[in-house]
Image (tube, rainbow, N blue to C red; front, side, top):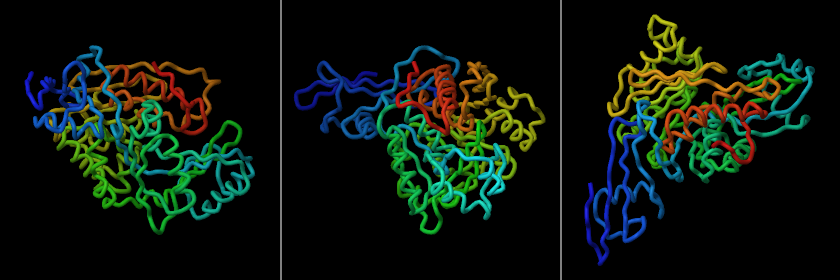
Length: 418
């Protein structure tokens, strides 16, 4: 629809159009003044113009559009990446990574390729690594990994925002500085009593043994979210990992409800089988708000069992999850099921698509721990730009393939995804 408005001697053509039944469900608004697109003047009083101005931020227009469903894979113009376009919330951990020998593992009762939560006997290990090993600090935690990967791919400072809880200590400062160095707008809640969550990554030969001490990451308070809700509302897509269900389910619900109210995209990850089993009550409270659900094949099957789907067929599981109750009827839920090196299955609105994974030579694989996190980060980086589903998956596979060739969730300075 075209509207001519004349203000202060200028003729402005306001062009607004929208599509329906979309992933983003948002309107595209441009203001054309004379011969070029520009920010509207403060005298332009049209309500749609004001909405676009509010969404754009300081002096910048945001392109608001509808991402199509899987049924349409036509080439789309990219959405301009802006500050705060993607939001994430989860458990921030500082990975403390260092090569060691078997004697170091034996000292703390660990085995090669362990992935455990810290007990009392492990508490001295973190400082021992700092004092006696050649350590590398890497910002970690599943959701933070995904957000960092998306930030790396988007290459616009503060395109991503991350919330979580850390302690007021040295490791907290290291974690904050690492996130900011990556370009993420980190906004942490600081816990007064608990130390920053850490994960020891002990490298012995080709093995990586993990020991996580969640500490302050377990202490996120919804009051922090309430004070900073403007950053949540600024995002077109909000993503939360399932591990946060153990920390602050009320915060997950608040973000999910905000997305439904504003018709923005809310994505959740199943994250681990035990969450589907022992935290299914808060998970199912959030599920009606979920627009995109990520999970691997094991998580999907455990979820199906707990929900009494009476099938282990991944396609059928995907269909049943997609058809669960949903609050925002404008969006059809998308279910993304990864299977390691096997094809990725995506279900939406009764349609099923299979996307092959390009396998990497085994000699190039260094560390697969963050592969799933990286896939989600790559997927979301294309999603927020309004790109077709096939490109979202392709970028997810590219990100995962890149990260597993490095230690921890790390990557080259610049991406070369085309």
